[in-house]
Image 1 (cartoon, helix red, strand yellow):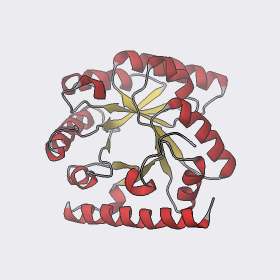
Image 2 (image 1 turned 135 degrees about the horizontal axis):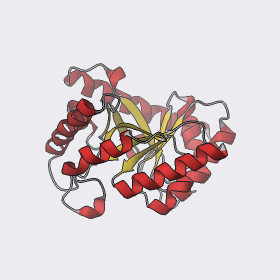
Image 3 (image 1 turned 45 degrees about the horizontal axis):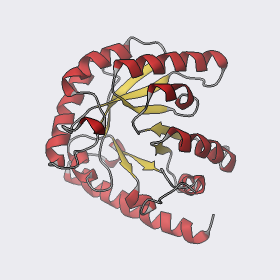
Image 4 (image 1 turned 180 degrees about the horizontal axis):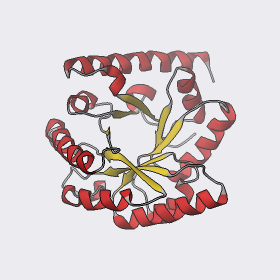
Length: 243
């Protein structure tokens, strides 16, 4: 872990935090209300370790196979670090058993069948001693008309939230969304805010809103995001393959 890379990450982190602070001030919000999540996909565990040294405690991955090894390596590099790992990519049901062994949070829950798979996998992991706590989950809301981007249709969110809420092995924590590739992120995040309010009315414990990335975090913060997921602005351009 080179000193040069440490400096690069420290400078990027300072810039991202400055953007977050400015976005919060513009929205009349306290910066402490918005958590920064480092999206470390395609970057090595050593980068996550350096970011942990710099004070970050939330990390996200979008591919189970890559994340599994990275989380294990991070634990070796920083065995005493109190961090949480989040799964933010689309998740196939047959990966549920593997994901619950390393993820503290799954943000990309978008169907009842995936809920069933995660519930079974979490119950088995708890029984086997592979995890100590129920799995925190967020409902990914589809704000893009193209289904390939994943997410639960907005009209189906209340029923999915209720299904999660009655599970003893899953804990509903809120909603997540990605702004559409083509369209106004302001409109998308305003829609997510309305959906989040509806979920919180029925489930007061589900207050998280995971929205906003490197290019649109200001819009997300303006509409109530409590978690921004930043990769490029923090770690640099994506690598083509995992190290």
